[in-house]
Length: 382
Image 1: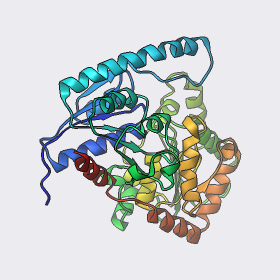
Image 2 (image 1 turned 90 degrees about the vertical axis):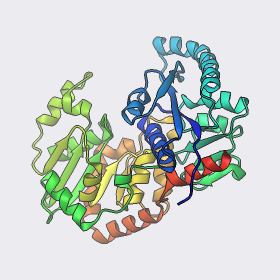
Image 3 (image 1 turned 180 degrees about the vertical axis):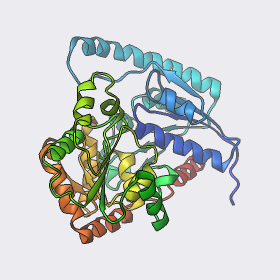
């Protein structure tokens, strides 16, 4: 096994799980290459990374950075006026962090929290690498692309966003438990874990940890109609903790779900064992965030994507279409999902040959060992 020398590195970015979890995977891989590696995370104060990164065992410093708001109202206008001042303060603090920590390299994973740190580092002559998870590059990474030395991407065709000579096709780092296709033993465990009948077909619907109103409306409509086409189908439905618990104004939605005749539907606010939910599923209905797409390819699962319309540059549609163009997934538009989605899902479950084709084509698109590839690039730059 190759010996990797001890290094000091800063990993910056966050805002959503799609940025945070790849960052943690990169950190874990660097630690596995040399347990003495010194790593520091830099994120946005008050955002998700300030909780998730320490829970993974790493130190993080929060910058006062903020992004532009997408909705026009008085509060957002006031916040947007403050953005340039927060950016300048964040760049100054980033320089201070760099001088004190003395990293040999900085790694950006996207999200506006990474911009001040990478801007400061590249201006100070420190090597830098960014990892772009999506098929359509985010604004932060596009701005930084010409300043950094390497850009690790998950999709082909990214030269329309970045200098071609800097691009490395690495894939997205994903959790190890969802990195290989499920075995027969794993499927058996999944049936027992979720209390499912192995003789039936199984659909997994997941709208993320907070839930998806669109997917939930599609489910409610289907259930209210008597679950057409679903006589021999069992469903694992992650509706999201807001909808399950009725928090933050979702009490009415909670009551509506509780009033449904759930029958063959297993209803959860949050799924802890995603590996077993994937293993149980003949098909998966989900949004098309970068990490989700990468996990489904790695596990070789047939998917129906409903891209979220509420994301920057409509990147979830680009992620989904990368698979749809290769006959590796199906897509239903968000606006059409409440009416069409469950019919498409039932039609797919009735076609085992079609499912097998989607599974095989999705698995062909999986890029294994993404974290290792990225970390080799990190060591190469140093």
